[in-house]
Length: 254
Image (cartoon, rainbow, N blue to C red; front, side, top):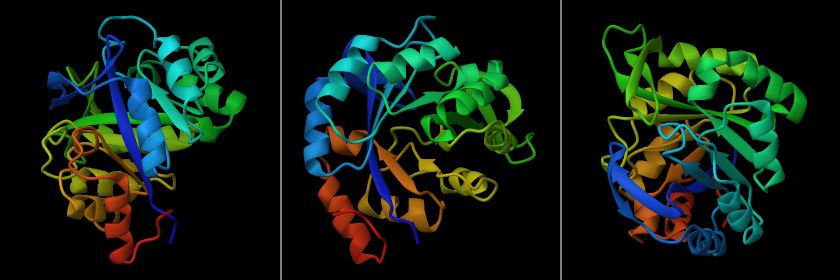
């Protein structure tokens, strides 16, 4: 069994960390640099930083945020939002990110995933897959883009398989139905994806109790557990989550 990793997520807007429910009703959740340093000290295995408004505002990820955050941590940093070319990817990695996460751009230009993986290595390329339930799709999940605002008529699980074939090294599925609700990860969606790919899967969207983290692994098949609200608002510490998982028989880095 692999070691399960905990990954706090900094959703960024206008230089601040924000958190919403179902991707809307955003509230301030502090300074990104302070949050990043705090989470590393707390025992986070990795950190995600997503510029949630970049694609909607049709602009690039703000490199200064990446530089500032990466300068205070030594754990791997995954950066996403507004990344749409090989040049963008290289600039974000140069600014201090260890991995980049693509969503809308990967869908628009699948070849970009292949090109980036070939040039920089698959381990640096994550594809974020946002979906909503839709019974007309073969898997029951439809891909949505632009911060969850646009359904694209494509099956989300099929797309995850395609991302692996293109050379992505990690997939990050988020169920729009669960995001920020603290009702638990969408286990059905996470499992549907972990069943069809041989890549690390990051469970994301909806963690609210310690049990939700455990279920993300045993029922969802996730390797990495991403959460935001419960860490930003100090519902649990990262250590509490890890100790709970260890007690339940899972391997974690304590």
